[in-house]
Length: 112
Image 1 (cartoon, rainbow, N blue to C red):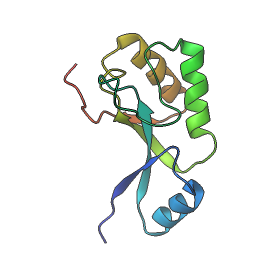
Image 2 (cartoon, rainbow, N blue to C red):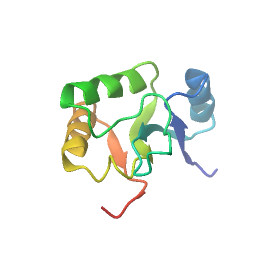
Image 3 (tube, rainbow, N blue to C red):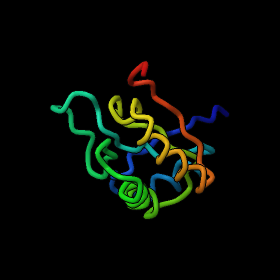
Image 4 (spheres, rainbow, N blue to C red):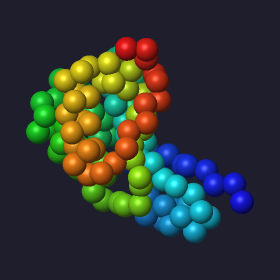
């Protein structure tokens, strides 16, 4: 049996059911966390992490995105070319993910 890691949008409808189905099929889940892209015309969706957020706000947004469901092993970025290139923003994100015991997989939306 081939197992696949699925990345689910944090704002998708029916997340608990989707996670349950994936786990029953033997798949691992990651949270596809929306983050600010470079292009301001692009909208990553609700609950996006933005570079102008301070650390407490970043932590609150992460909690809002993740606390309503479970069963994921980590996070990867949805869009996020601007957010992932910002050292301060990423430090806040990584500290929160570390505290939660979650991994981060960079989708490499930018080389920075």
